[in-house]
Image 1 (cartoon, one colour):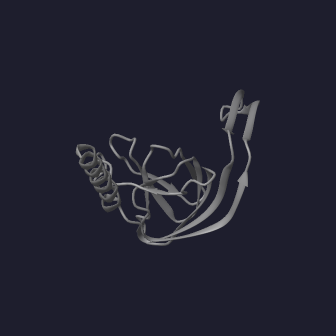
Image 2: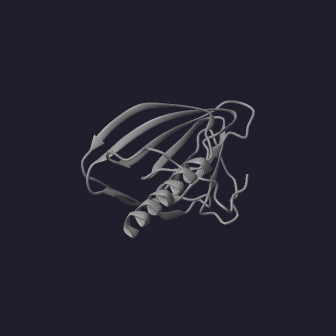
Image 3: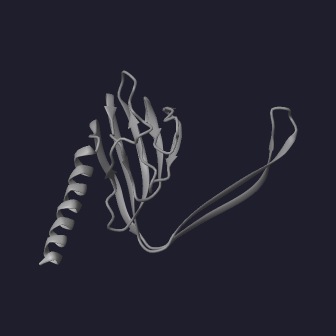
Length: 175
């Protein structure tokens, strides 16, 4: 009899935790999202390494090293997503189970990241890009300008995982 009560209590506590996380999630508003492409890929092993010489502003040659590496084990869902942000729009606080590369193609976007203790705004204008590591790094994008902003994101997501996971406002970021 005691074990039935313990199980019932556990179910209630877990249910309250799930309900609380949904209620505390910050809503997205003013963002229109379209999936431009989606494909599933097997293991990904992209690497690049280049050592070149570039001419600096001083007119002298300088070595330049560039290294890139993306490796996944198992299948991945790859997305190309177009996000259009009305003036004042926000994605709400969220994360993704994998990394993203974001291109700003119109306007400007402000990115706030939970792993930044000061929650400083990082502003990106059209023609620039930035990365989102995903995982336990929660972030929020906002259009703090007066015109529409647009981003194109390339996302690497484990197959079958949710592309976006809503999160509550981090304790260091009260915006």
